[in-house]
Length: 81
Image (tube, rainbow, N blue to C red; front, top):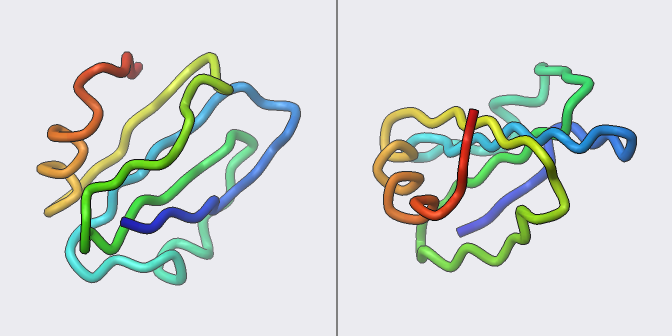
């Protein structure tokens, strides 16, 4: 699995977590802007989730297509708004 920040704001403790669908890539979302941190997870070749969510106070989840299944499998322990 790969991930890439779409938006970074060091002054924000909020993170929008996006799990893309099959064949998603960060370039598909490059037009989006946010004052929050936004991270995209994609390329589900494996399910190694090597990311520490503890640096953020609030988490928001957006998932579609295959990303719904992957997010459900990997993020059961996290609390989202």
